[in-house]
Image (tube, rainbow, N blue to C red; front, side, top):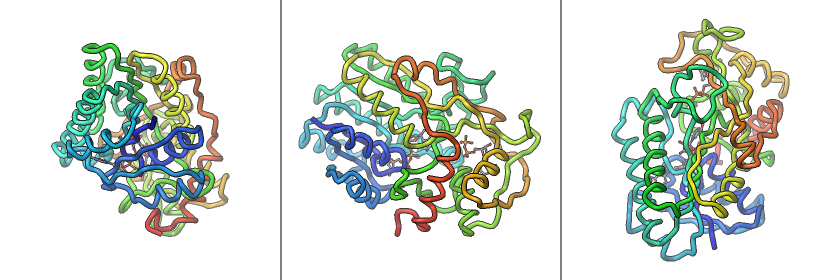
Length: 337
Ligand code: NAD
Ligand code: UDP
């Protein structure tokens, strides 16, 4: 029996495939390589010494997805495949709604057809939107602030309806906060195309001399130093959260949402200083206007995942910075090297 990982060639998917293989699972990856390269899968084999199956398949192509299920004995699905750039989702919302939602509908339909009812879904802290207070627990009202976040909320609702319609479904909705860092081997990591939108890859590219300086979006937020606060979490901790979620869905039915965060917030300036302390690299920066749509402060209450998944984030900020920097230095052109 295998675990099917959609989007398994991507950033979080590749780290999760590695943890699944190390835990003894067989892995089948489906990815259209829209935002990733097959090289990440070769690297996983290099690190683990284990094989996985790969299908370059578009999730929107029902016949192709069906072929993957027909050719493999799938026990459960970890569903990462989706588009994730918030700004792009505002500019081209139909592309986001279609890819993320229709892709999930096709996947669920085929799972149903093959009698497979176990799924771990990549949701996001984006389902919360502007939080009323922090830390954020799973049961607060949801209100995503952009089309990307709305695709995640809509998919969560679709999956909840599936469980109501047929209680043999077992679904974990994992709401990630801000995954950063890379595998400590320096062989797999985040490979953004073009200029990074996210803070950590921007910082590592400034440190590498690829970008001139960091632009800090806003210094007048109601936070300790005026810059935005987020819950940064090591991608390996996120991957291990999937392992725990897989164990849960394999043994129990039901549907549950879980925050995967550390519970600690860091401001942008604190991140710049942490990176300098960990790596010795000074990051030149300048303050610029806030980025539209950004919230002041967002960090998790991870108690539910700790109690119900028996999972806790173990890696601290120094490790996150060191691992992100090792990946950048070893792979100046990401997986293209
Ligand atoms: P990623 O872009 O690196 O990985 C997603 C993978 O899905 C890519 O390899 C892409 O090629 C593939 N894909 C996209 N649409 C597809 C389709 N229609 N058919 C087949 N493959 C398709 O992104 P990531 O950072 O690894 O994120 C994984 C998931 O986690 C996404 O669903 C994302 O929305 C969610 N998430 C990410 C973050 C983050 O900060 N990275 C935070 C919260 C949630
Ligand atoms: N940020 C920044 N400059 C950048 C990228 C991000 O100041 O070039 C800030 C952003 O305003 C937010 C934090 O860093 O306060 C994290 O942003 P990211 O895009 O990584 O995550 P998200 O906003 O999706 O939580």
